[in-house]
Amino acid sequence: MSAAGFHGSKYCWMNGKIMSTDEALVSPMESIHLGIFEGIKAYVKGDVLGEGELSIFGWKGHIDRLWRSAEVNGLTMPYSKDELLEAVRACIIRNDYTKNTYIQPRIWPKGSWGSTDSHVVVPVWPFETLLGKGNPLFGEERRFMVSSWRRISSDALPPQAKSWANYLNSMHAIREARRCGYDNAVFLDNRGFVSEGTLACLMMVRDGKVITTPVTASILESVTRGAFIEFIPDLGYPVEVRDVTRVELYASDEAFLCGTGGECTPITSVDDIKFGSGYPGPITTEIAEYYAEILAGNVKKYKHWLTSV
Ligand code: PMP
Figure 1 (cartoon, protein in one colour):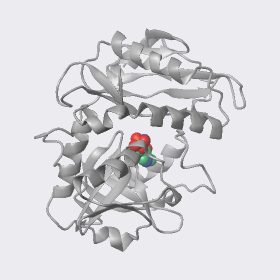
Figure 2: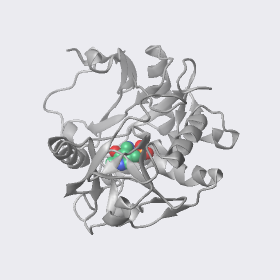
Figure 3: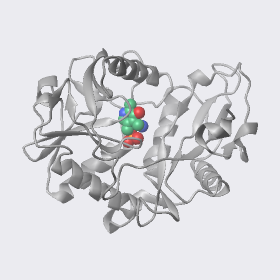
């Protein structure tokens, strides 16, 4: 399979120019495993299930985190944030994308460890959203388990840097979950408190309140989580950011993931204990519908979170 065939993306931006994905080649000796990346999404304006012009959600939060990840991991960024935004725009336009598009800037040291120059690649590819009214993907059953793997903690690797190395932790938890017959897993942190999902943050609903775990629970400082904390109170539900025990998670009325990839994903059960108030939960559904409107640019108050392609 060609590189382009992998995600159906014909062109990417690499080290300053747009090129065919098949021609964006690097030496097998490159230290790609020392790299960092970002996961960003651009949604169709007006209707996330439609087609047309796109806008990028949370650009500032994502690009600032990319810079922080580079700094923490000792990587040099050879381009400015504005240059990367132009790279993303050029890449989406060159690929002729008019449907929701995932953007994944990847940075790794040129040559070997300690290099003061980096490769920067921006691949983009289409994705299928689970948001939008009547979307059948939203209500699919998702059975989770509490992983026997703990989420990496900052005494070993920086959980707040989005580096590829951190994702091996997630892969172990996902593989364990599949092996045990579950769809995915929830991590506990090194203290035994609930941390997050394998690829997204976690939110719970209890007695009309939304609860999410703190940055000190070894989570990735999620851009989506930050937005959710800000907009959920508009719907009349207070948000608490605090430690959550495993049993409190079991006792929740509803639980869902939030993240760029995960969007707002309802969870059916954890360790075969079903959440209380039916599935998908009514508050989760309300939040997901509001989020879809925000992403489509239909909520004036949050238009500043969107950047036109
Ligand atoms: N936690 C992990 C481990 C993730 O991979 C992601 C996805 N980037 C998130 C949380 C959510 O972060 P964000 O909302 O910034 O995408």
